[in-house]
Length: 341
Image (cartoon, rainbow, N blue to C red; front, side, top):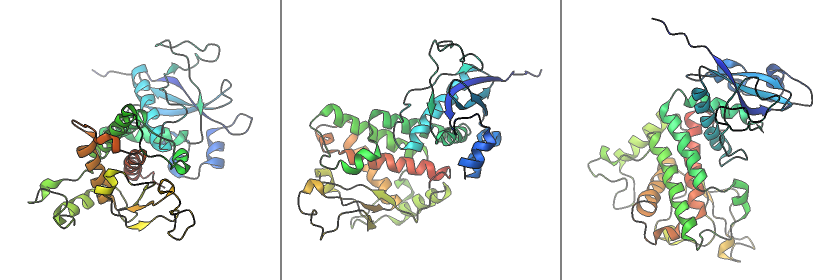
């Protein structure tokens, strides 16, 4: 017996704008989207159980993303994943940091409250919305990727700072508040869980030594080769190192276990700069770190500092530890999906 599902259309509340007049998906694509994989055509947004259509909305004065699927539940799951994809694409929680709820197509023009869950329709516009939906569609076909974007969003929800806030605010690293420091810890745990979900954590079981580093501090060759092989298979460009924030006065963690830089960042303070020795809190010593060393360091922060009985150790976690962990997790997701630029 063949079961036939009737496809339905649902408002998402996500829309894009182009000028003040009505416009088509093709006009928007031709004028504002260079990447062929993001052009507003259904084949670029075909998920496992849903796809997208675009309808100009007088309510939003923009082109709304309409989800086409068989049920409210599937549309809702898609919107949860769009929310998580937005966090990955933006690198932090977005201005629209609450889930949208699907509304059956045609029910929002004259009412703001008609919805199965009695939730009002939410509207949100950004030029990045095509990327949100594209990543969500990719994640629908790979449960490990789907788990990864959800865990990333959870990490940013526990704690995150917008990159522009971190760009200049370097006169503090840790806080006196265990309430916040615990959030640092669990944001790092969730970020590292993204790495595990992608299968890119360090696996010491491939070596007889059962450890990532040897007594002299060098990598165990078998462990390193195994990790690099998995990174490459996942689409990661291991030749392009990860940028790393190292700022202000050293914490106890940084003093006892400094991370190895491959080179200093172009924007780091120069030693002959007038401000370099003015205050330790003002130093910017950012640099680049190899993927294996970055993964191994966040693994250490997760296992030895943030997890289990944390005692007083979490008071030495810094806001930059969180930012580095989330940046690494995000970078690996975007590399895997060919979205890193």
